[in-house]
Image (cartoon, rainbow, N blue to C red; front, side, top):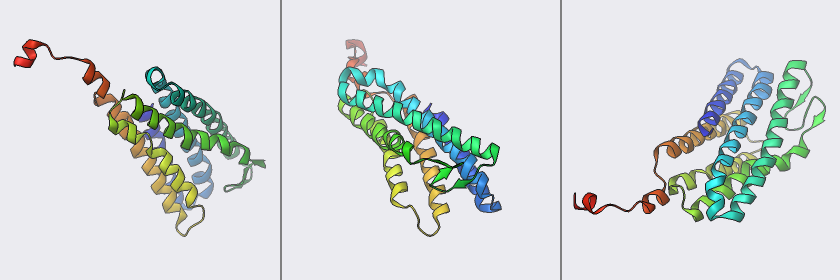
Length: 202
């Protein structure tokens, strides 16, 4: 699912570039926003896939992260659906304010829970439990850092380039998490397997 998230964020980045080149702001804002929301949804589903192993060794952090991930899923599914509905119906859009007259401020707590708290909780839980490599544990914290950077730069000159960089950063991070999970042995697995006398001799 992290690899799927990387693809979705990559598509969102492509829409951002298209909007910058053609000036199709509505396409960039709504369809790109829907793909960004879908990318977060896929990433949060990936986090929930890590929950069973983490819950055995870091129960409370994993549970907290699971709750935050579910809240984030609800918020991002709603955000993505509202963006697509507004694009299809031609509803009025206010950047950062409302879509089709529907204020989105009430989903912001869920977005914080999913983007910031879920990933940081799973990162700390992974570090404490030791069921994944340290690389994976650290990478799980990167989406939270990117979210903070995004919130900290709300209206600066060249904001569209900042947004593009943030989406590309999310795509690369999700790809790195997914690739590392598929290819790297977890430290617990390496510790749990004792070498046989024959293999030690060789």
